[in-house]
Image (cartoon, rainbow, N blue to C red; front, side, top):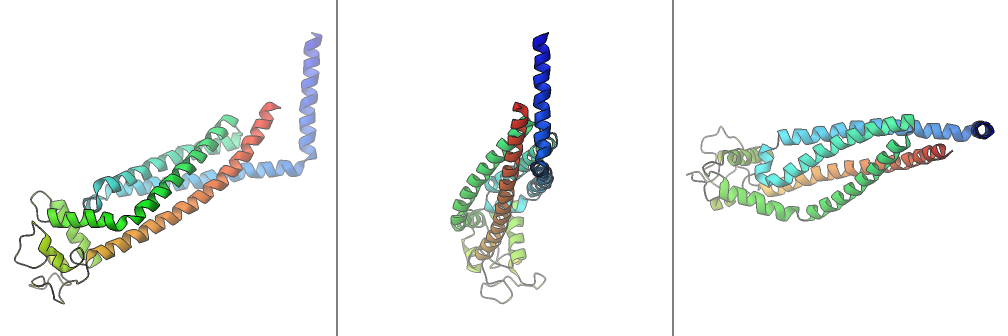
Length: 268
């Protein structure tokens, strides 16, 4: 009985000591409280980013028919599903992070911190791979897009290829892969016209596609325009990725502070 009373006295003394030390350091308490709510705000913004990334992935999957037949189905779809999966993971993790920060739950905070660090490492690896692919982009397009035009356009059962190539030439205002004369190498393009009508500046003009060296068709090839378009979009995505990564570093720092605080309180 005496031991139990001593235990309660020691416990009350320890709690009183913690309380007075906390009161005596209001500036520290205010800073820690500020960190907690910064982490909550960070997670809310991170949640919105996750929803945006998931939406981008879903939109790409739903509207990728034309592009996948040109640049390769695996490349685009893998990227789209990666975006969708990453967005979904971010939504779940940021929700757990908000709850963990508000309740200062050590287990949730440590889990959240670990996932943030892991995500940052994966993003860094993906960025390196993307940089390596960026250097091979010209070769990749040369192989896939040129082969698609030369071996599949006009071929029976490849209507999607026909639509995709025609759409490419109309929207980018180009003709052929490098030059309009490239249509001579298209195996299944069987037409008395020199080029498809999608090469025409004005497709309603009769006979607009009858000759290669004509002002009625686009004279620039599609390769250079498609390359520039992809590079601009890759640069945009890369810039956003760098911004998100820096934002994550802030979240990792703030979460680490909260983990330390939760750990000290649990030990005391």
